[in-house]
Amino acid sequence: MITIRIATTSDAEILALLGRITYSESHGEYIDNKKHLLNYNNEAFSLKKIKESLSDTNNLFYLVYVNNLPVGYAKLVLRATFNNETPENSCRLERIYILNEFLPLKIGQQLYDILINKAISLNFDCIWLSVYIKNNRAIQFYLKNNFKKIGSLQFKVDETEYENTVFSKKIERI
Image (cartoon, rainbow, N blue to C red; front, side, top):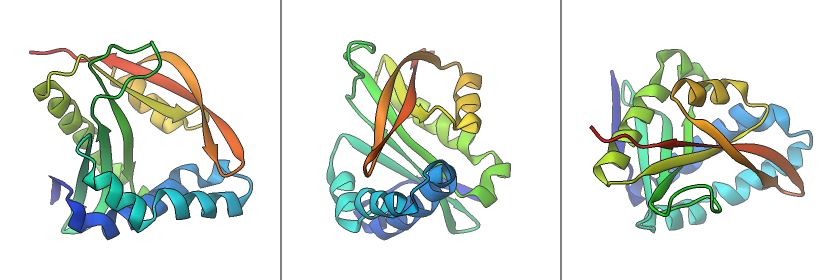
């Protein structure tokens, strides 16, 4: 059984561990220097950083469970714009990470649908995200969900910058 719920500060350890594993699974093959990957994981997914992020009221985290085991999560950043390319009333889909073993269950789509409905309920006009240019699976997922390319940005992992494509989507209210 798949369940999805809002994460709280008491979930920091689960999010830190899931973050490290899922980021390494989804991006590790693209990072040549594995020490850089370790340094990034130590910084981005430290308990301190995750707790700070969970405490920020502009961040919403959702945890995904399959048969009561945590298998993924998402992070939505409220009131976040991309340069002058998105409207002022925008939010950012910062992460949808699912453990590789559970990708065939199509949990990412269920999680995405919850995030879009949350953005609608909060009256946002636009949602945007960035994805590494070589992450074809993620790019296809966002294109399938009607995102459009609006730009690019550099994402730094330790000493190396990686080009990311920025996508956005106008939020349609029913």
